[in-house]
Length: 259
Image (cartoon, rainbow, N blue to C red; front, side):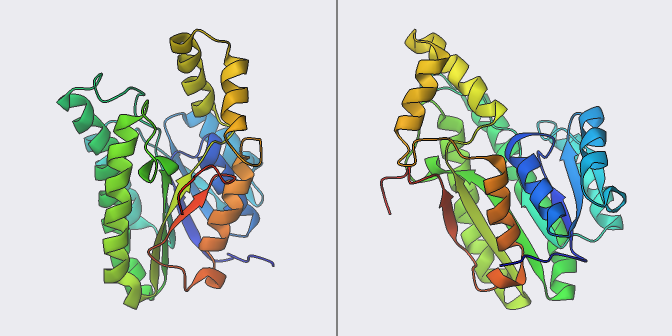
């Protein structure tokens, strides 16, 4: 099945590395014009130059953890540019369990994971409604179904994102706009390496042991590849997925035990 996104314009958060980069690369491979969003400008420039048809792509330097600054930049961009495909993705909040976080920590995670997502989505919807076509895809986590004790901030706020997305899908479906959430399992990214490093210290075992234990929990016995994530997003962004709306789709190698 060939995915053709020629003529579509995508705005992708957290796309200088990891899952976000995997998504941006596959959308570009499918013919979309992509705008990358992240903090590291030199990295963004480097990535744009390496994408197919690099003249069709751009980037926006933003820091999702500084909402007011992010708000100004993204509002200006969307005012002046068409966005057909929005991929809501940010860096993850700090790890920790429920006893290690105070109310300020939850507020910071809310601004990072929920407030930025809702605001950006609200900005792109009017033009999508006018065009009677749009794709909104949220990068969330398997932890919304089966909480991971060491990621209490992510568990809590990403659950809110999924519930909000389901509500929004009812309101905008009639306009040819779909909104779906992807429940992310274990992928070979810098984020996983950072979390495993912390686990290694707390459990007093090597990072290799942490990684092997993580892989053993996945029926496929491996971590996912960022490009595999990109394949799913490319499909959801296409007309071939026009009847998929309001869904929460796991991509986890079978990690989730529930169904």
